Length: 494
Image (cartoon, rainbow, N blue to C red):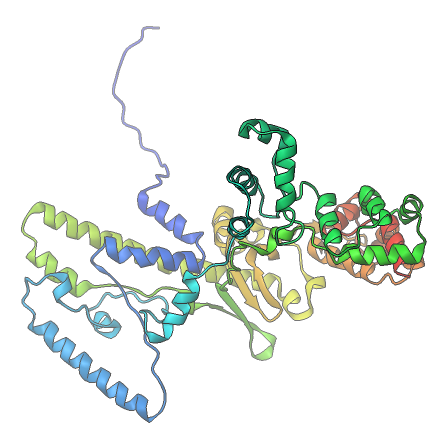
């Protein structure tokens, strides 16, 4: 068959991921806090976008006077706006408030903003934001400056301090460090001995045993029996109390006292320094119980930005545009602003729709607790609301729901299912873990300790068809020791 070249026209469908679609996907998976930070920068890139700030109106007689003054100021601003020549720059002309923009026919207001600006009352918050805690390395270097070491010792100590991790442990090989610094090992060991006297006690230790030994030595409690206990920490981890008593040469009462002293120590002495401040989680959705036991789902509008399209300014600059480049720029800015507003509105609707379906599926959890959490996956929610699984996955990422039972990430409500032994409705894995935790928490004596096999039997009697390895996996995930270790703990405690 002869080969030849020819032209053909074919019609087909395909999905093109445009920049606008990429932006919509990006907005969908943002939390409200991340969205607010993103929207904050948009007016800088697009002059047609206006970030409106809503001021809270104070109450009382003074508020009426202030409100009247604000009305008068707004009237003056509007008069100045109307008197501004048409060729004025954007900065020389006010954009108007939300009501004016709405009257202009095109301002899209889809949320409510928090208070903006920086007043006198905000100085304290600004000061707190700029302040930070002293890091562990800064704390150790400050003590090094007062230690009175020679220059050579101070230089070696600085190298060791820089090798301390966030927990306070020295993560460096002493022999290699001595060779690298060009000093002998005894010299470096002596410098390390000085660092062991720094605060917090136990810092610069090379392992857990040395860390605990330094703290016990500081309390004058490092006797031979305690040293033997520290030398056999693996036995303590296994709760083998009989072997510990034998190697330490002590009785039950002495062992209890020694274990109490060990528990009072700090295995990570550097953890209190340089820790990142706890970030408060702002809920994206509020769940309230309404009349008749129905659940109401509301977006947290306090954390959503208020963004408007200034169509009045767009009309002015469009009329003033002369060259094709100017007209193209204004047209592109308007198209981008309109697309962003549609994306924000669609994001809010999608989050609300997914949240409503989750609440509808997990209403028993909201009413009765975690034992009634139902199995749920992304596909079920996606089919119910007519969306793709990937969309539901993006919506539920990094977003939280404030419910009467607490604040939960949306991913919390999606759990795998465990079949029922009676052929009924499947059980949620989270509710099964909760039942296992309840069974183990109810163990008060050695005779009441449940083995994994016994837990399987109890759960099957309750209608949960679960394997022993699954019980062991859930128990280990919750950091619950085995039945043998729990018996040893109860025996020591008794």
